[in-house]
Figure 1 (tube, rainbow, N blue to C red):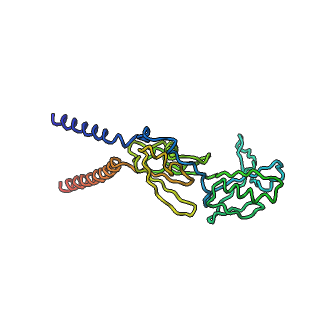
Figure 2 (figure 1 turned 45 degrees about the horizontal axis):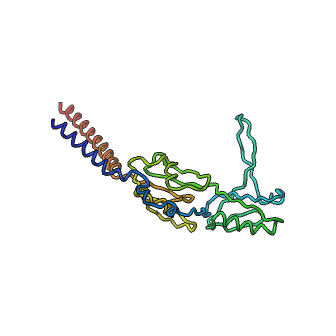
Figure 3 (figure 1 turned 30 degrees about the vertical axis):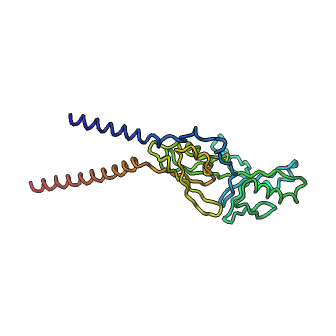
Length: 264
């Protein structure tokens, strides 16, 4: 009877604690109170930063005229046969150095660090005008646009974003979302700007007004860290303590058995 009573009390405690923590689980609560059109943040172009890898294409009506500005490199491409390897050209990639510069054919060294892609395209377009008879179309792509999601998510890792656009909820989706014990009201965003300065921003994903935050859209090399809730942290401590206690008990029992055998 006593065991049944204790079990019933334990179940009630679990139910009550579950009800009390429900509001910490859903995303975007109180959404109906927001005017979505007024809260959406402007979508800023990503700024070019040191160690970014860029591809730059220059197009004109005469491909031969723009060819000197579209360098290619030969890459190995394995065909269906294991022993058959073909060489296929791919666009030259430009690594932005620590000063924010790249070395571009004919034009030489160009400073692109801190510029958006559109600004860098305009800059290169202006520098190309003396060499071409028409205004070229310049397109810049970031090859290594990556974000990382760590902590209490189902599939932590680093993810490449091909379209160079991702928000914090999409980033969590790439990582398999948070389990129930991930803290949704205290998500940490680590961001490094073009000057190398880092900042940590706390995001509350329980609140719908996150979609109006200037940090809703992520930038290249952003890191999201999700902390565990107190229950998960305590369970982890209990698990480690239990393992140590069992190990210690086993050692004591072994020593006691050895002493008994010696005394006999």
